[in-house]
Each structure stands twice: as C-alpha cells, then as structure tokens.
Image 1 (cartoon, one colour):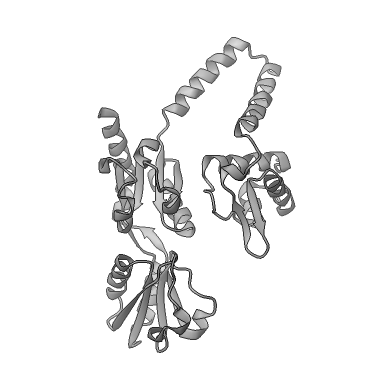
Image 2 (tube, one colour):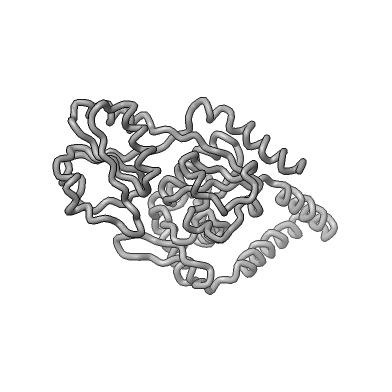
Amino acid sequence: MEVAPGVDEIYRRLLDRVLTGFYPVGSRLPSCRALATELGSNSSTVDRAIGRLASGGRVRTVPRRGTFVLPPDSATVDPRDVVSAELDEMLLRARRLGFSAADLTSMVEVALHRVDSMRRIAVVECNERDLRHVQDLVQRASGVEVQPVLLADARGRLLDEEFDAVAVPIFHLNDIDGLVRDLDQVIELNLVASPSALRRLIDVRDRERIVVVAPSRRGVQWMTAIVGQYYPGVIEGIEFDPDAPPDLDGDPRLDDAAVVVVNNAVPLPAGLEERVGQVIAIEWELDGRFSTALRSRVESVISSRGEA
C-alpha cells in the first residue's frame, strides 16, 4: 500500500520548487486542492506545509487571493541548511544499507557530473498563466526539463549565460532584447490560438464589431491579425498597459462592443464581461508543425553552443 507523503516531504518539495525558481518570485502557488492532487497528498497536509513555508518567510498568503512567493531577501530559511539536512538523511540511509564512504563519494561525483551536464532551458513569458502553460507545452514537446522565467523578473540578467537555450514566443522576441547576448541560443516558439478560442471566434462572425485588447501596440497588431483570420467584420484595438491601465470602465469604444478579445497578459476590470456581453480569452498552443520539430531544434541549439 502506498503511503501518502507527509508534511515534511510536501514541505521539502514545495521549498525546492521555490528555491529553484519553478515558482518564481511574485508568482501565486496553485491551490491546496490542486497541489494535493498533483503531489498525491491531501489538502490539509499541503496547507500545513505551506504554513511552514510562510513561517520561514518564503511565501505569504493573502486572504481571498492566494499564496505568493516572496523575494529571497525576505526569507529566513538558508537554502544550504535545507540541502544539508536532506543530504544528511540520504547519507544516513545509504550507510544503513551498507555503502562505504568510498562508494558514496564515487556516487556523489557521478551524480554531480550528471547534474552539471544536464541541459538547462528557460521559457520566457510576460504573465504567470501563459508562462506555466507554455512551460508545460515546451516540456512535453521537447522532453527537456525547462525553467520558467517571467519577463519582469529577467531584467538585468543575461539568460543565455544562465541557460543553454532560451525559448520565447515569437511575439516576445523584441522583449528579450538586452536579456541575451547570442540570439543563436534563442528558440522562437511558434504559438497559435487554441482550437477552443478559434471556435468561439467563428461563433461570433455575425457581429458587426469586435474589440481586441492587448498590453502593447505590437500585441494589438498580433491579436488583430489572429482575429482577422476568422472574423470578417470591424476589429478595433485598445492598448492596455498593465503598469498604466486606461480607464476601460469609461472607454466609449467598449460601449457598443458585444465581444472583447483578450489574452492572459491583460488583467481586465471586474464586471467587464457583464458590460460588454462576451469576453473571449486567447489561450496559446504550439503550432503542430513546429511542435514535432522542437526536440531537434533544442538539440541543435545546445550542440552549437558546445561547439562554439
């Protein structure tokens, strides 16, 4: 009979995800129920493990909003202490199984070599929801473990020095200018709108006008081009800067709009859907033709780096 992981194990797994950036600073953790399902535990155990993370200054829970990862300088837990405790536990178990010090030293050296030779791939996106989704898409298509990086968290970094390759959606290529030195280490992700979103666009072909909302002028152009392939009427764009959002509640362009098309980078005001009638959120998928070639593309980029 399998035993469900306890609080200590769930805590270590969640802490490891925080320390490695699997949950980036500022990101919201999945719900206790979702984590319990994923980790094979129960909501109560996960809740207690998250409480331990909060006590250590790694996360902060905001009522009715969720649990968010705090910056490292807000934390009181030393990552070395965590790793050291896990290493002690593993070595103690190995010695009880009869492994000698020489055996363990050799095994650690082999493991370190294996870890150091692992491919390190970053996936970059501008918002948390798309980041997790694209991370999963790339990981499943390429067979390579990837690390999520929010654009806002990448400022001042050189991602191609931290990672062997950097995967980014085509419409964010300009956004990583200055974040990489060698564009040959960048893998352009060809994303397309999900079939469910396209079906919803086809269903509103009889409407006279659609409003597209995106966080930049380039984003508006990109979204307009996508919508225009399936909708023959008038398409009006609104640029919505999350850092300086316009007053959409009073925007006359929305008054007669029965349909508003957005992506996950746009945090729309509460109640907007009731006001306009229908909001279609564009979810992204990897282009099927590109998806089949992604694994070889990753290998090619990493190989070229090794030859340089």
